[in-house]
Image 1 (tube, helix red, strand yellow):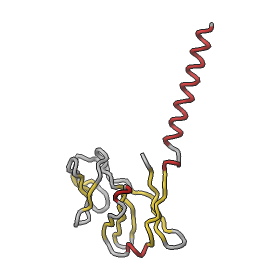
Image 2 (cartoon, helix red, strand yellow):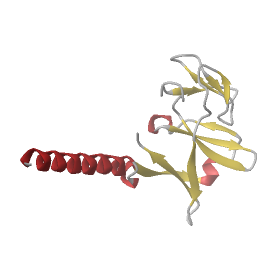
Image 3 (cartoon, rainbow, N blue to C red):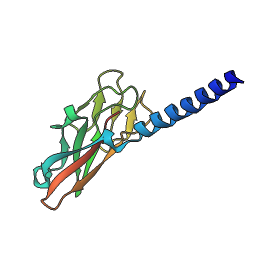
Image 4 (cartoon, rainbow, N blue to C red):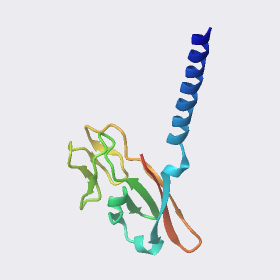
Length: 131
């Protein structure tokens, strides 16, 4: 009987640990908001790579301002912005068009678009999730 109690406690603790680890993965504490400055800094159409080291690019296309992940969806290598506004993965050769869509593999998934808002001061805020 004593072995069953120990086993039961083990299973309960294991379930609690697994549930806790899932909660940590979804925890908003893994998110950070980066203030990339005034929206007027991004008035010209193109790709802005000043925040590449922080994991994203700012992209202006027409009147649309967006933020794209700077990591290839194939193996998470850092991307390089190209003069034609596309993105290139130096690790395995994937390319993405200026909208973040896969142009050439081995990547199969498009680049994630990050949450971008403009606050009351006119500054652009990008929400970045750490893996």
